[in-house]
Image (cartoon, rainbow, N blue to C red):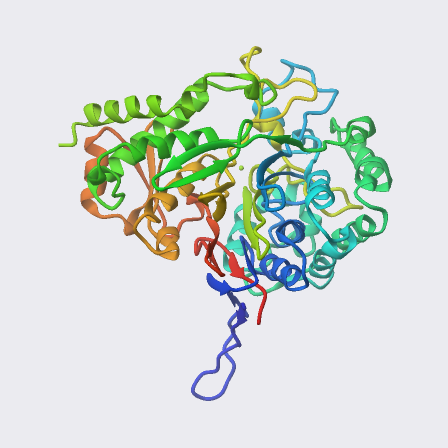
Length: 537
């Protein structure tokens, strides 16, 4: 359980001015199931649902709604949600593609990315309410109004702002002050909340109450839809009533699969980035053991080169998600392609915007990995004064130049996504659910964690220092936690280094749940505000 630290006193008994901060439970165990999310309040909400007899999907939906309250700059009702579910009753694993969609009134070729980076025009049609409700109806067991109660309470009563969130509010202060989102998320619409203060969102609480009373259909065809339409009309936005009425229900897709000895895993298909994860782990799995050790100069260089190659291949081979399942040969998933790539890497190096994630398992064998976002930190930075949630800025995640590109900005198109929610199997049963936020760093964060778990404890694997290579060969790394000889090796291999803070927000935030026999274990990445928890005895 999270523990609130009391204000301390000095030797004269005078209370020192220190914020009442929360120390989340990063590592947890339980016999009744487990959930790990990027915020401790959402974790507790999901754990309570498991304790009451809800299944993994019920807990995931509850926590996902709650994350939109407690991480308002990362996700919420105005964003999109991607779901990977293993259904124990059927033994099947399914990906719910919850992509948002460009409005009907988009004019192809009429914009550039800077035009649609912030503001009302930056938003695609939100899919999160539709996706979460679909998952609840199709795979859950509880009523929507039950799953929304924690979000209503957290929005009404407020939650404690963490040091990380206080820093993010300061970082995004100018954007929030300039736009309508600041009225809901800043003190008096002008000042950032400091660490330890309470952030209340009464307007958002009313929106959740309406959803609980009238159902998600109200978001797309009722009073909430009308409020979104009117807000967009007043501010030059592109979303209209007819966009919302074509409810963006998720599409059930077949996951992509891979192997990391001795495990097999399922992860997210296009438009997600699961292909990059499969290729990365396929290549690393075929390298000599000495090159799979990320804590050596050789291993770090091999991993940076592999991530760079996998991301380049994804960039070079984009696919329409509806066309992708029809393809026969899928090069990025091919074991033979991975073998050739591993051989190439050994020869070449001659070894001389912000997102959230949650993972859940229940005692019946169901498992969920869910990643959702409003795209960049703060999304569009706009919010209806009547609704209280930030609209996304996924219009910035399209292709703007190549008209033949599957993610070219056109009416009803879906944007690129970097998500890779993943379920790892031992035999036919889920062993680990895992994922991370972090845009293009998602694949590298998940891959490094799984590679380390071949030899290390789960918490050690998640907390270990990380690196990431961009397409251009810029390697971000948690500088003070990385050995100097590793840095030297990366530079000698032609990479350019960008040193980040230790436990950097930039390097993702892995949330993981594991089942070992009759026990469940959860780990929350110490890089952000997450926690893990399960039903209490």
